[in-house]
Length: 170
Image 1 (cartoon, rainbow, N blue to C red):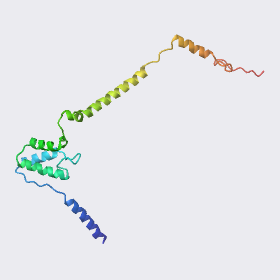
Image 2 (cartoon, one colour):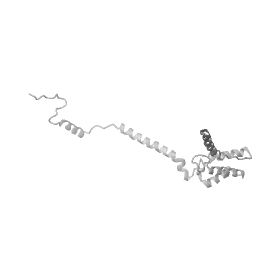
Image 3 (cartoon, one colour):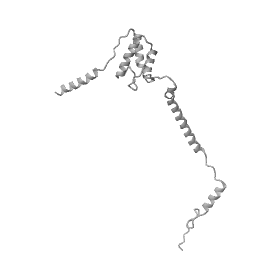
Image 4 (cartoon, rainbow, N blue to C red):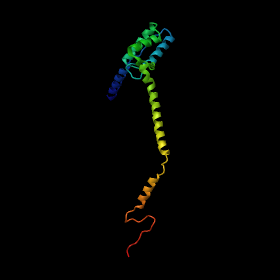
């Protein structure tokens, strides 16, 4: 009984994965098939964050693959197909968005942050080296006189450091 139940559960699980659509398109030539493959691998799925249209199982990716196939059948160029998709979904569908005023931060922001981090690290290292290498200057004559005066003033119950202690038990 357990075997039948296990087989039924496994069958239902496999049935769910068997319903995944597999695109089968008939192309007029191998060159057209290669153009299709290139396009669906270059374009990003609008729903899936980092997956191309070829690898995505999202319904929108399936629709886009069908749309690309239809446009290829109509004789449109790769640029026309890409322009159509960008007009509908924006630069997000491109893995390599164009360098424009809107995408400057996207293209050069990481490099600017990296350079800024190295500059900051260099400034910190140079400041620390500067503090270590700055030798303490000697005391001025006024400071030396004050230090000598302070050292000569000792409390009455303390003996100078260079004399032995006096025994006053007589």
